[in-house]
Image (tube, rainbow, N blue to C red; front, top):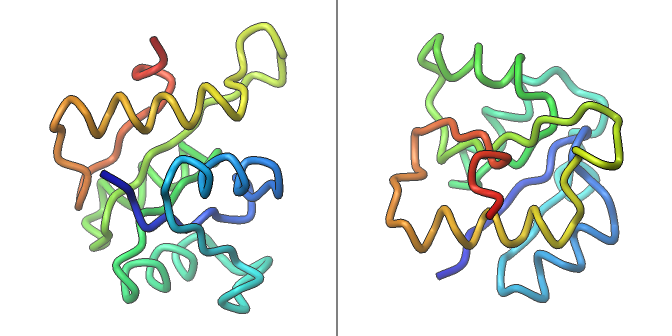
Length: 119
């Protein structure tokens, strides 16, 4: 299975995008949709209009948007502490997405912390 992902401003990284594409996912970026630097709500609405799953490192703000009922195709969030010993590598992010998919967990309309799927 593969996801149609939108990497928001916080999650976008060329190397991460390459890893995700190599794993079979489709990746869309803020640059692709002219949303660079826009408010989180704009990112979420833009992605939702295109049925894109939003991958973000801005977990607090996107979880709040989810709780407020903003429609979306799914939000996997990556928690980071700016500590390389705890932060997820690109490979771990790709693996966590795979683990989430393989578990058969609903992604559309749901918010998931990817760190919980790192195993």
